[in-house]
Amino acid sequence: MSTPLVSLTDAGKSYQQLDALKSVTMHLNQGEVMGLFGHNGAGKTTMMKLILGVISPSRGKVEVMGMAPDSKEAWHCRSKVGYLPENVSFYEQLTGLEVLTYFAKLKGFSKKQAIDLLEQVGITHAMKRQVKTYSKGMRQRLGLAQAFIGEPKLLLLDEPTVGLDPIATRDFYQTVDQLKSNGSSVILCSHVLPGVEQHIDRAMILSTGQLLAMGTLAQLRQQAALPVAIKPFGLNGSVANDSKLNGFLTANSPNTLLVPEQEKIKVLKQLLSHEGLDDLQVETANLEQVYQHFLSKHELSLHESSAQKTSTKTQGEQG
Image (cartoon, rainbow, N blue to C red):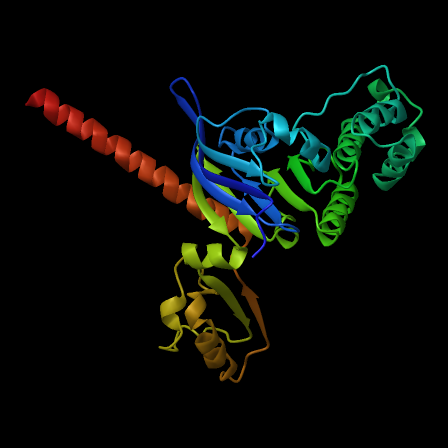
């Protein structure tokens, strides 16, 4: 088995009383795309900064390409890492080409690569213009070009599709797929979930610095035990009279059966035995529903533990 490109072992980061990231263990393999999901303040950016070596862990261990990213020895690995921060800012007076040439040379690459990358992200037409004239979407594309310098082995992208229109978003994901097929590993950090799921191999869900869940979408669906929604057409109420099916109907979904994954085939066979069936719609839980499930469960457990603390405290005061 090959060594993971990135590994965190019980890694955490605290600032005085605040745990920005509690003990997180994760491994990222070569050629793998990991989606990192969570609301603002969940610990996503802290985790990225640990992997970049910009900050050091308060506890646990972080390794990138076999070494600690905050160590002196890691300097030569940095040219193989690309990073797009959430809010990109550049020297406003420089042109797009000057900005990218500057970053390319810092990483030991030529002006020619800068020109190729500007073409790849679709802003060749504006490369001689000052960055201060760029729209938010164009700045984001310039930021992506900067992250792609040198075909990095590891790419960290923080909210990469913010400010991009649907076509630019599609082009961006095509580039991610291309980098992955070239063997690059990507950590894609986002709270915009639609459209992400077909481009990631695994997902990590963070909240308040804590890792709530990690795995492929199929594994997360299984852990969450979310039902499959099956909507039959043309049966006009006969489902309600079928004792093998009516248990899957609810008041909220009178025309849709909510079926546990393991019962899906049995229910489909039963539906197919009905004469009037015209069509079927089968929907498994998407990434957004899985994410909401883990988040709600976490919020509920936080609420319960704080209620428990309050009642213990009250009992203590009464005692």
